[in-house]
Length: 124
Image 1 (cartoon, rainbow, N blue to C red):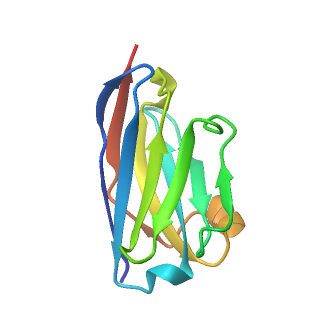
Image 2 (spheres, rainbow, N blue to C red; image 1 turned 180 degrees about the vertical axis):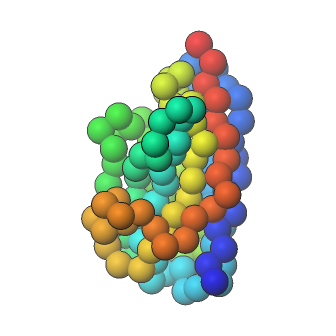
């Protein structure tokens, strides 16, 4: 069983930065595409970013392009989401997700493993 544990959320102001981390265990991390999704109050879960196994390919939602950066450290079994220039509309619970295969598939169908989520709140 894959276990994903997110950390790094919090309450910040508009324009601030946060870095989320997701530590993975239970499966060979380097064979999983990794991604971040988020769910705002009253809305469905939406794709944010994904990164391929070797970090050679990344995908981003249009709403976060140029502000968020996804990265991974396969030696530490950890994926990160650096979030800059945060806006109130970024407020959501952020979930880490993993799936063997491609970032395109991960974006389309989500992962086969999910973390418990970490809250990010951006005040105006």
